[in-house]
Structure formats: C-alpha cells, structure tokens
Length: 279
Image (cartoon, rainbow, N blue to C red; front, side):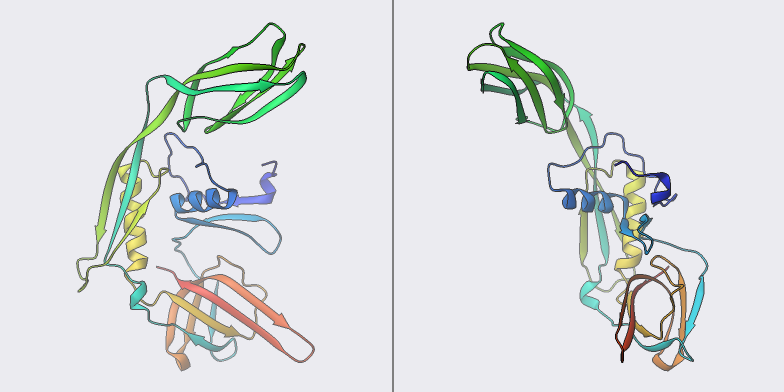
C-alpha cells in the first residue's frame, strides 16, 4: 500500500500460515473485517497515526497500575450472561485448484481507437491460474494490455478500423475448498450455547484448534468488559496492559484498553476508558 516500515506495526504473534489466500469480492471495509476475523486481531491507528495490527489475545506484564486513591474515579464491570458461550465451533477450509474450464465467454463491442474494457467478471472464482485468453476479432484490433485478478479482468484494445463486436473467452483454473471443523467446549458450563466462526483464510486444523480455544477462553466469561472514568493519564495508549486495583468499586483485574475518550472545555474535563480483560 506504499507505506514505509516506520508507518505500521504488525504483531509478531501473527504467524498464521495461509496456503492460498485471496480477498472476497466485497468492499474494502468488509475485506478488512474478514482479515481481522481470520487472524483474531484488530487494526487501528495510534495517536501518532501509525497503523497497529495486533492480536486480540494478549498476555504479559502490566505497564502501569491504576488504583482508586487518585486515578480511578468510577468504574463498572457489568455481568452479561447473554454474551457468553459454552462452545466455539471453527469451520476451516483446505483450498485446491480445480481442472481447467471456461471462466468467461462474452461478446464485446469495441469502438474505433483506444478502449479499456473493465471489469470483465469471471463466471466462477476465485481464479488461481489463467491458461488462455482468446479474442476472436479482425486484424484491425490489437491487444495493448491485459490484467486479471481473483474475480475479474481488464483488457486494453486499439481498433484501427470501424466499431466491431468481438468474442472473448478465458480458460483457467479456479479454486475450490474442502470444509472441515473443530470444536472447543467448556466442560464446566451448566448451559449449552455455541458460536460458529467460518473463514476461508483459516486453513489448518492446528490454527483452527488454537483459534477455538482462544475464543472460548474469552467467550465463556460474562465479566470481560470494563468502563472507567479517570483523572486522565496521557501516557496510557491503546493496547497497553494495565493492572486495575480499585477496592472501592470491587475491581481487581488486568485489562487492555481498546477505546479512550477525552473531552474538555473551559469548565469541564472527562476521561473515559473502555477495556477488556486480559487472560
């Protein structure tokens, strides 16, 4: 994307292997959510504008301790059993390349002069290999450029003659996927409620098993989320691990802030922090 290494940070814990990866034919926002779901991670820009890509599951020592003698004004750790699950099912895929077939056959009108025909969408996909692109036309038409992606292609042509209808056929190999699944279950749960995660970029049993265990460890607890009103500490950043010791509100936990809101005017100042429990 044209970024320098100093402009982004990728968590070294994100080592998930992907045999064959492709973007779904969706919007940019949906694609980013898809990638984050596959890696069980989140993406944000820090206060310096540096892009941070970090695992959702973190561990380690706290960088600071906040208590109710000065820093914490109020806090809440709501109990929400409606947001808990007793099992997690992860459906993963093993991609393979199918036999060659016609991926696109279409009649196109080519005007005189230069023209770009795009997007020319494949009838199947995602496309792994383009074997041939056959253009049936007169000698007046020449191909200037051809490019293709997972779901579509573009064609740049020059027609030295009059407007002409041509036939384009693309032969290639698409990807298909064999489906598998794993399940992690909380044996101590007194109820049965399951969450299912399915993502084509989770492509091995080992990754799916670890993913299910990580999600279950968080999803089986009803008290993962916290909200605090603080006096304010500008040294705290999103993704930091903090130790909370607030006897007056009965909260003692290790947390990671995921949202910090600061609002101030000439006569008012509020500093709130939303955080989630760290294992």
